[in-house]
Figure (tube, rainbow, N blue to C red):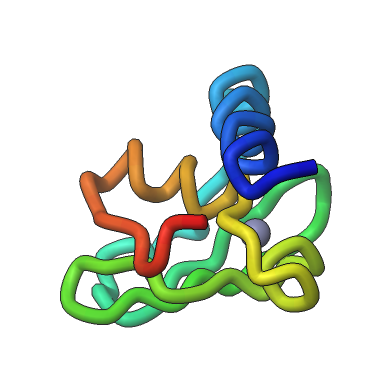
Length: 85
Ligand SMILES: [Zn+2]
């Protein structure tokens, strides 16, 4: 699968599953880190100066791909995503 296909997949999933995500109250306005809950799992999203730099999920940690969590947060809060692809 190419980077572009993975990115399209992540965007599709972020869109289809958007009602399943929950941003933990209390940290979402902290512009350095947010915790995103999806299906009972917690993911740490690191943000620097309104740019999403990483997510703690396996897709980003091991494959360095842009994941559906980063895309969800980008759409919800108008953050950019570092190093798309
Ligand atoms: Zn992720």
